[in-house]
Length: 201
Image (cartoon, rainbow, N blue to C red; front, side, top):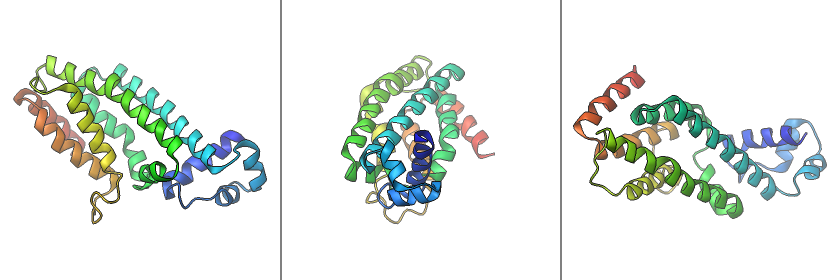
């Protein structure tokens, strides 16, 4: 039952945001009493925390899979977007902002995961790309990684671009494109453009 509750909570939080979805709404969707939910989650804070924790575990698995399947870093970048396309398409753009504002303990998990992602994945990818001649090697790699993570976070901030007509997925894709074109070498740009054309076709 706990896994069913968590799964439904995740679905509703991602679709509508964490602020508006109530425990009553989750119970109603599952056809159970709110008391049953409280037997597994004492409050909404604990449920949001578990949702974030589960998401991070799944995200780590996806990163490991990307490393295993796509040794070429530029291909890996595009495949990571393909892998998260459904997530970004279905996710409420305010989700991360609301977690940060209303559920600080859960957001701390995101922050720690972001730091881990910077050091385990992004810096390593930038170094590898530079070794193969795809990326410029005259820029501090940690600075690049932190800039890229900040761009990802920025797209979730409703105050960043309040009149944005793009979907969350297209916003993230556009920001990534702007970022990549600033660090690619001529060799890297040729490969990047070929993958980009395949993505559009």
